Image 1 (spheres, one colour):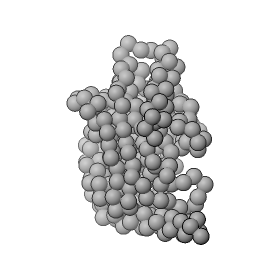
Image 2 (cartoon, rainbow, N blue to C red):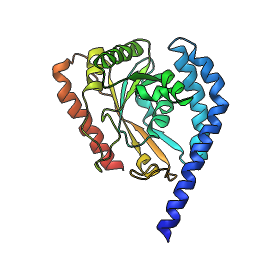
Image 3 (cartoon, helix red, strand yellow):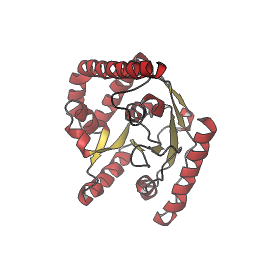
Length: 248
């Protein structure tokens, strides 16, 4: 009986969250459209300023308040390649406004085709078609340009959502190549509890839960080369794995 009730309640909650998101999106759509006409980094800065206000109200209204820890690790005037674990679709609306300062993320090109929603991805993200070598190469150039303009890059080194049941999936090289190529420090970060909100394998089902977003001490890449990437990737992976298992 309890499982039946929770299944129904979880679907009602998911519909509520989607409808509230759609309603609030309509409120902010016009200013976001205006921002989209501006050059970077101004359009991303204005978009994030509005997005932070939006999510500050939206996330508690759906019973998922976000609590951040470790913001003191961000040094004023420095850019970071922020790497984060990835468990849920809700991760992006938490990380994008949750990282202080102006930042961009890497997003699938298909996301840009979604009406209304796609416009936000085109502003806050660098679009990439992973099936195209040209698109992947261009996305790397655009990420380097974003860092040069004073923006952080927020990347999910697992590539896709983690469905393994383990704290982390194996990392890809991309974020670490970018950090080494641009001599930008890496900021490990971890999201907690988003997997409890969107349960894998359940369609149109969600459950409210607080979200914790922790930033860890940055790792310098000054003087490192591509030859150092495997060791750097393993170091960051181990730091994040150990922190997650200690705090989950």
